Image (tube, rainbow over all chains, first blue to last red; front, side, top):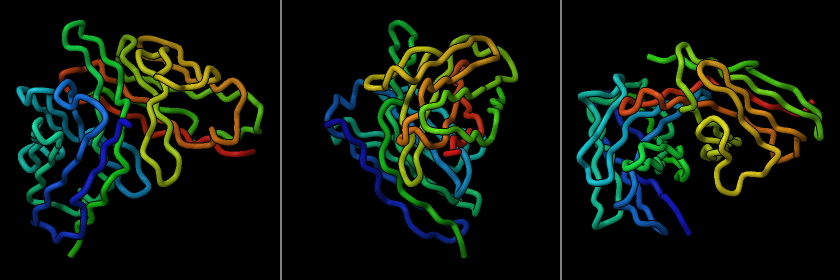
Length: 124
Length: 109
């Protein structure tokens, strides 16, 4: 079945680094834009970053620009988020999600597949 | 940045009743709006995209309406599994990142 599984979360000190991974299965990964969304404890959702199907386009929230890097390996059906210079305010559950976007028609179909999330805690 | 404001913050509804959730955009987002449902300890689930189109497998009791700056998610007859937090998200500023509302919690009355 269609599935996304995140890994790589954990406890890290401020200023440290972490690399999140998201393994996709059950669909043609290389056909889809992919995203990272985070949710701080007790808070709402924040779209952190996305990457196009061929890695040609990426975008980042201002809150993470210059510190986080999104990437993907279509041969391995995997999405990544390299997080550097981590801050306490980066503490959150990080979800990967499939962003269904038809580039030919310009039609968006929303984030239709989500992983279960991985928890990142930034604390000394 | 387009700010999405949801109301009310909490909605108390009895099972079988109708629930109406609102989402307002700080500027027009056309019909580029999605709704998600999130239950405690779970990932969000896509309910509606394009303001009014139900995602695959979403029951017909969920409906979305609106365009421009005012949007509504209606749950026609609340079931026990519908008690959750609901988020709206605009993606009109693509290729920029869309923004989410702060959520509406639907709780049992």
